[in-house]
Image (cartoon, rainbow over all chains, first blue to last red; front, side, top):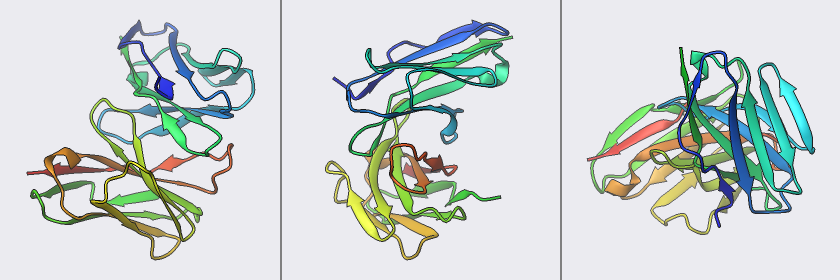
Length: 110
Length: 114
């Protein structure tokens, strides 16, 4: 089992709709969770972090964490064409290493 | 603006010819990381420095070495690049390694091996 899994394929959403991305992790001791956005050919850019169970909102982005079920999700409201990118889930566990998922590609259709 | 800088942005080298990638930071962060990212894959941590303490990942090939001469600079040396080493190399920094400390990435260097 991979440390961080992002299994769904490319996600196409109409402009203005909600994009929902999910991520599961295997290390039950993980405490810190991050979402990075990566445009094609560019480096990852931090957009959200969450440490506590529940929801955390920042502008059009909401991160949701459920430690009991070992998943973290990202919602993008009012999706814009500029949101078209790959979103990487990253989890920091007890070894203080940041483990990344492979990412989910989001395509916002105008 | 405080930032992480990587040079060059694109590097072309020949099979077996040593190459050095550079990273500098103005954030005064204690920790500097090197990641390798291949197309459609997750970034893979190669090693990191906490101040001058070097921490190598167990599965990082010996072909990859690193130097950190001071707080601001860190170098990635690939002694004998193979075709499989073509990738984006990402430098990142953080103020520490505690659970809540985030990593900030530079723009990356894309390496092509001919």
